[in-house]
Image (tube, rainbow, N blue to C red):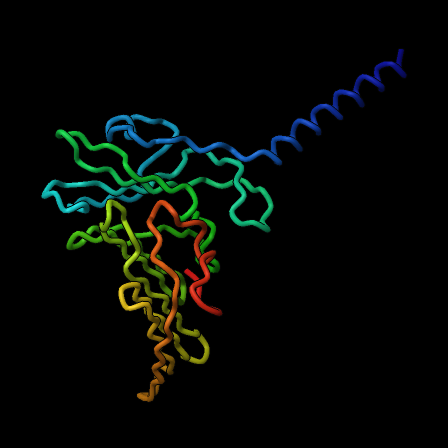
Length: 230
């Protein structure tokens, strides 16, 4: 009787461990919000809006919305090709265009927006979202650096037009500022020290074609040229 109980217990524990292992190896499938209206998004209890920007993006004279949503519960995600599957509060960026007096989701990206724990030394990372002069701007402030991306409506897409990567070393004061211009196909790199006036400027050409917001993968996964990623 005792031996049978032990066998049953071992079998039960094996089933539980197998279930947990399979759960950890399976990524949560994020919802498809394309075609939904703003009210439907706001009423979804599984997601909350952490950033919102309002302005005309597609040049039709009507106010559009850009939203960054965060899941209310942590889910299993794999955030890079070589990463393990870990629990995160997922983030999604949506762009809603004004059609017939209703805001409808036209663009969705599930990967591009950094998660709260992806800020390095920063305990909590949250991007800023702006619509300014018809351009969508996504901005990150890290402990000693910042990153921004600017998108503009062209050929029925929100295409990246520029980006900036700025970094200052805390101990030495050395800095490196990279300005990406996708209209001129060039990167202007400025290198110097905050306590000195001398600054070196280099202009680097690239052949990478602009991506749309929908096409972006994980941050810093897109190689523009050697050692320059967005």
